[in-house]
Image (cartoon, rainbow, N blue to C red; front, side, top):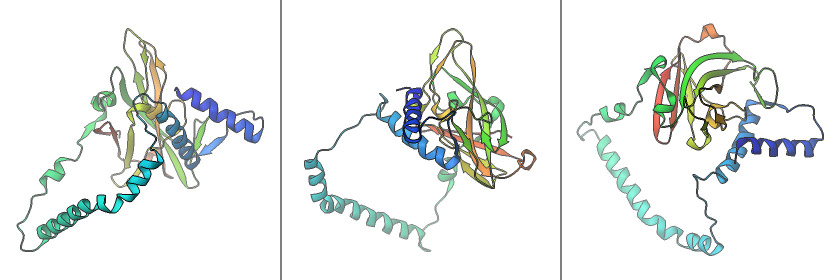
Length: 250
């Protein structure tokens, strides 16, 4: 199911509940997040990459009846793990190296060298960062769905160039990759990128990218009220399908 169909259904629901409107409502970041989660559930339901099974009443009853017995082995395992953890943390226990944990940290790459699509295992597309802006709402022309920052907050809008194949069209469906993103500002403040219904949202973009075409897609995060000059460093972490990457945008 294309995102346009879901947007159409949501728009029709809005008209039926509130009457005729001249334009789509302007949403706060929280409202957009709630609606986006609902739309994501519908998209996942009809996505060919996901399988669903309705559990019968008999299966539910059997699972509930077997609950205590089924959990017994897990409980014993948890106790064993706790005992092992306590023994390792004991003063008499030998010191253990923490290097393996540090090796799991994703290395921050220079953004000029980074193709996010390649890093996240997304085929037939190139996604490169271009710029960022701070605003109170996006899109600022307030056409269709938009997101507004809460009082005392700003929207950090990061722009990316999305490019397909040079000689043929690409049916782009980034929603199925379940892309998660988070930004870190000045090495201290951190915020998750919002799930929105903005048509050019990077994480849920589903349109045909024509051969040689470059599309502007965005990732939006709500951050504390500040100016661009206040942002000395900006790092974006992204993950999809078990693959991760991090890029310093500023």
